[in-house]
Amino acid sequence: MRRLLAGVVLVLASCGTEPAPSPNPPTATTPPPTAVPEPDATTPSPAGPTVVAVDLDVPWALAFLPDGSALVTLRDRGEVVRVAEGGEPRPVGTVPGVAARGEGGLLGLAVSPRFAEDRYVFVYLTSAGDNRVARMRLVDGALEPDAVVLDGIPRAGNHNGGRLAFGPDGYLYVTTGDAGEPARAQDPASLGGKILRIDADGDPAPGNPDPDSPVWSLGHRNVQGIAWDEEGRMFASEFGQNTWDELNLIAPGSNYGWPEVEGQGGRDGFVDPLRQWRTADASPSGIAITGGAVYLAALRGESLWRVPLDGDGTGDGTGEPERLLEGTYGRLRAVEADAEGRLWVLTSNVFRGDPRPGDDQVVVLDPATLQ
View 1: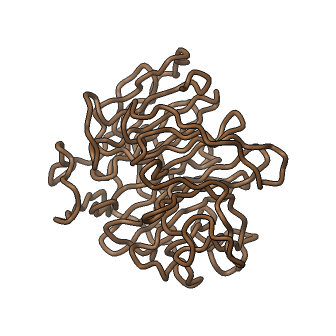
View 2 (view 1 turned 30 degrees about the vertical axis):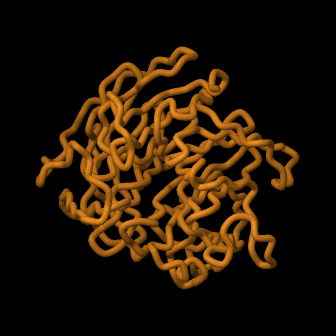
């Protein structure tokens, strides 16, 4: 599945049926990335909210580097920037082959758990013909193309999935959408509508339900967030269609029902979600787990939902969801927990939202202070 990358080119496309583009669209050509110095050591933020970065153009995902700074993808520009407390965002490179249209573009990213040795950063991008996972290297403050490790994931103007994360087992998990064709989610031969599990070279990871397939779970419409608790249980957020958004507990080989079931259907052969929300209240994107709770960044719901975990090891019970920050920052695209248990949140108001001064932003929050 690997193919060498060459050149650093940003390809952009547009679709007239999508919402109006960002008021600061990318230029037709983007200069090649230049090496930038490593950021200074980060400074812990106070208990109150700390705005780490402002005026970002459609940020989509965030992942931490070992020094506590973070990489952020800019979906429509196909660029990656580095952010740190007390400093300005610094560009680290442009990902080759990105063709941004609708909800597609440069989406998820994940930093290798062996970053100190291999310097690998993995990104999920929409190209002209598919969605794919590319491996890059961050050397001397600049991203260098390395290889496409997984391609052939269906693409469309929406339902592209796109979240990447390394699990406790050291393997890379990839979320995909049905790309507008719901039947893909139930087709084990399609990469659409799935959660995939691969190694650093893009091959199916050892222990997958089918040793020859990257598919870890199926029956998904559009998974947007994945995270693990201290017991190693995997949770995922999922966009519903018209009725129910979901928080699921993911088990290998399980079928989560789409398009046969949306929300809690109680049907044999399909796994019901742990929690569900009306789509107007949630549209959950990225998720994070810290302090015994799952936090879900809600787009349409303009909130951060907190779902307590029961901790009894069964995975069947959760506490009553609590709605936090309703309307405070507008649409929230992603949330990640740092080593101190603080939440780094990405806003998403420039695209399909009501931009506020400084949008879009990275905000650091102490969970203990949220209301």
